[in-house]
Image (tube, helix red, strand yellow):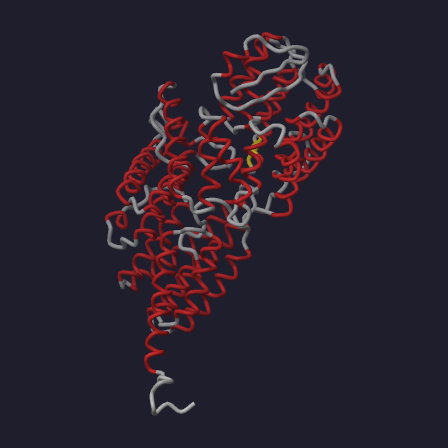
Length: 537
């Protein structure tokens, strides 16, 4: 439902807009009635991270009221994606310049102190300084709005989101819990506000805190059924809790919403990307291999078409596929990275090491992230097939792929620390498996224990495992193979703490417990019975 309040009165158009189902927002503002519907739709979609749709509605509000300050503020804010650490400062500045050419002139158009503060926050966010400096200054201004206008639920929501945006170097529990505290204060009064419930899910989006986010997840799916991201976002909590039926349903719904909108716009269905990656992973956890393969195959075809278009200047979609996105990646890079991730999860979770997907290749081009994932997966497959020579050759490429990926991040002036850690773990896992295959099991165990410690030190991120073969799981499997089930059990329990309900780990743990019980039974049978006359206490 959509609850729409203007600055002085309740709009008569609210019932019609209530059918749009993007969540309830009420934002006091100085805009005219003719601009309210689009402004408030834009605001709701801004909270839902449906940035393109939000920008379109804010522009419509501007057309209705060319001096409506908050409509320009809203469109500018669609160029900032705090949780994803993406921004387009240049585009945001151009949007603000359409309101007035200078910051002073723009602020003069804001009729209230509150609107001036909101506009100032955008001026700071897209002003001078490093990304981290601007994010901190922006958070401070949002804190001021929240404290001066405590009844402004959007101020609270944007303040919490700004706080999340300061975690530039990975998930930081202290920062995320500070944001959660702000949202919890307003959640009871505004349980259907899209920003409040959405950002609460982000705050609790890890296997430790996920139980706290289940309330918001259950609500969000109901209040914003026409927002694809809202439907997907609920699956963040479900995945963190190993609730695979709910996780799959959420992403199936998200894809249906997204593709319905794409069809209306004359665009083909989305086959790669975040939602499909999570959908495939959920299918794999349910053992639905055929469904997972279908999703993977769809992404493969899309990625190959994207790469072909990017490589061909004569292609009608060349500009779209080779243009730069906020992340610095091209659409072709994003599609191929998605394809590589989905292929890795498919092969690792099905353990079909001789499947046709093993023989798939990447299109020619400079795609370091996708190539690293491809080579890592291929090396694992070669080791499992006993092709040690091929595995060594591919493992060497994984190392060079990692170096290229880190170099690309540095070139884009992005934080490369997590990528560097992941590359180190990839290499360590492969070296350990090769050592085990060469008859050096203790060297392999020592290496995997070291890599597990490294993985534990990384921020606990959301979603399918960033290290596609979690090190604890790999360590447990090796220990079990070496007939060390008690140690293996500890490794599997550590793996499940980070990835609850993961099918492979659950099955590994069950097999381990069975071996421990069998060993205990066998040992008990060897012990002399207390009733045996020959037994001597």
